[in-house]
Image (tube, rainbow, N blue to C red; front, side, top):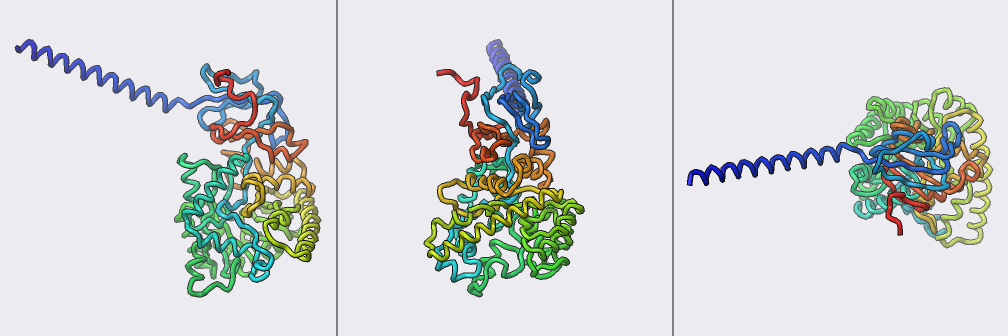
Length: 468
């Protein structure tokens, strides 16, 4: 009896030892699996480096986890057995594209002409107000859809500059980073800082404050300017966005810049006319958004101070007329649109040529917030490439504006903007040569973000896939 009990004890002890051994082994295996990053080798006929303008042919990029380990000639790079091999054939590889100025939570449909004429800022304000008063949940789904469509078109990083509610873009950013939804890397600005009356006027006074506070933070003096920055910082924003007109002073904007910089956050300033551009320069803003009426003297100041000019070329060449296609227009209104488009083309060409010649640091963003008939959000955003080219910018400068230059403007040059070791494995591929035809960027066929394939319309595909 005692022998049986001893045997049972030994059996139990032995079983526990086996279980413990198996448990420890499984933990060790899990830890080893978690600590061993996935390895992927991407091969293509060409790899374009926007910084130098040089094309490497053929090319290979070795990826471990979400970072680039090596980039160069296939003869110099080898992957370990079992690595995932992606063959992109005759395609051209590029860094993931960066849209440095977008609005993911707006999708404005231009109202009929009669409605436009009844309101201040009539083409934009009605759609903006509809977005604000709709359910935040509904708006969140719209933002998520826009983000996914941007990513599918090759925009692996975007900077969302306002019009996303109280915390729409910060929450979407966090959801994407956590892997809950698909989208680009987002630098979120939270609510835009404005002077009262900047976008909408003559609202019902019983509702005006409650509505507008869902979208904006008001600047009515230096103290409130500082408080507005702090409110956004409490939401963990990545950048502060300010709309400047003659209603915001240099003193107020200087406080915004000082408070943001104290927390190592950059300030992007919407400034279109000469006066607002000068305010942004004098206050030391990090980037001037739009800058359409910038003077030669201001360009020199921007260059000497090392500030960035963030061009928004979406409206340079025919876009305004296109988005009015959903609206009912009188012949006179349509004729006026066509005439304004021609004036816009001429101004855009003059602006682009002066900016390139001046030597200022520049990037480019879509400023996309409109419904474009027949296009996804990403496809609509991509029209800016041809618009810049038609305005006289070289294909290489356009590529730099949405890769290396944009990465520097965002302060993320150590993470994105180039296919280099240590940076995120954000890659896109097109079938042709974007230096010869910049519209290739409107037809991105392969997208990778952080080592994960988002889309691959190229053949042959993954060489490890079973043959059929």
